[in-house]
Length: 495
Image (tube, rainbow, N blue to C red; front, side, top):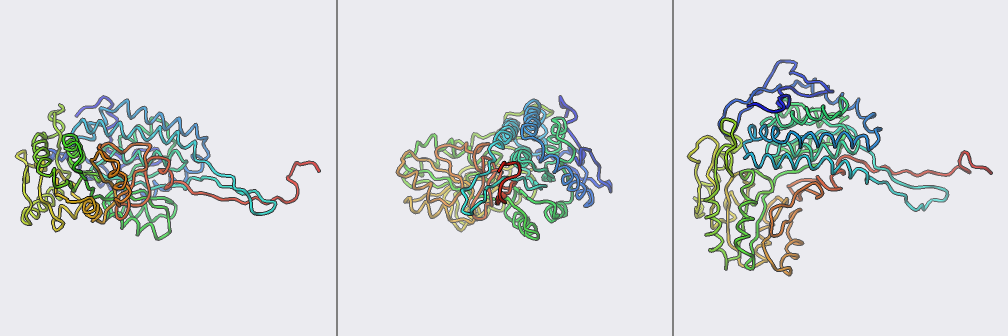
């Protein structure tokens, strides 16, 4: 595939302002999930090379933190402008390695860029405080200080946006970063590194490394010079990151799995509820931690909702994002890898065996490969895997409820607590539901709720900390308190 800016397609890691190969010449093949064609090979760095990236970030930190905020902001804004300037190339790289439709990929690139100027500006409000003193002759206050080197471990489902959402906050606060992207989608991260270099980040401030996943994670997380770790991925791996980071008690931010409930009350406008449910479930081919996994519908409107929802899902178009470099008009792309495809088939088989009613799909798609039919399963029960587990796939489980109390109990019946959705027009229902749902983010009558000004994150097994909004700085700054005692008169004062 050709790009308007050919340098964006990089097959080298980025360390201390240099593009580097693996010291052992070890590489990893990257394939397009839509057709399994080889995209290219990227270097798998050895442990000393990943340590060298930490060395570089550690060396660069003192000068970067001392840069005036407006100087850091100028570079950040230039980075965002370059991302938007090359949106089409970046979207095509993303679609090629991740598989999502090109329209979704373009949307992700714009979303990724949006975090950078937000944090560049919001860093102006990293205020300290003057504290009224309780100590005679002392002045008390606080400062917000950057923590230092930050390790950013990012996933394959949003390979561009999850980098900028973390990195923009860390860099604006005065930290330096080492990014370790998912090995399935390295090219998006390396393209961002190319644009970071063009934007003018000093050597060592922004680094991107790849390596054997377990080794790379442990090397980054267990290095005592890395003072903050931000991870997005599965709850299983998040627990391992937390355990590794505990060895020297560093700051940790985790954005993990989800099992989002989608509650449709009887008073909801059903046509709108169906539209929102389709978008909430099937965006990113269902490979989204905020996807509506359990759709709960009040029994009096359950049959009509099922009919409308199934009809809408049947209309979804499945296929590759690109054929011969030409954009395809599709809604659903492939699953990311064979393991994801296999577990999807297993969950559907489990649900059908336990009595679910298949309304749409439920099988491998005729396109073959990693494509799976958009699927609607009705009459789902808590015994089924698709109810209990996070479903990173285009499969929707629908079930009825008889009372709001039952809906709340069902919605909270999960270890996860990331996102939840409500469709209702009754404020006397909506607000109590918002308060009583054990999920950190609640969307009402719409699917769009993320973005640069909001605190994104989860409760329970869905994570720790928040990304985006003013809260997005918390993983990358420390509050330093000072108590300044007056020793007689200040120097320079006249008696």
